Length: 64
Image (cartoon, rainbow, N blue to C red):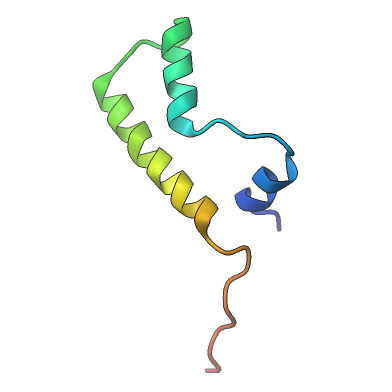
């Protein structure tokens, strides 16, 4: 199973953050600015950064 960290690390270029993509689309007129949408995308952006900072592998589970 491929996770997003692997995808981002294997692309070989810096991927735009969710917030950067939202702001770019607003700037080009593809989306209309909405303060509620920006607030949600800002929270998504924070989560995106947190997930990227996670180690690639989870520690082993303790025995049952």
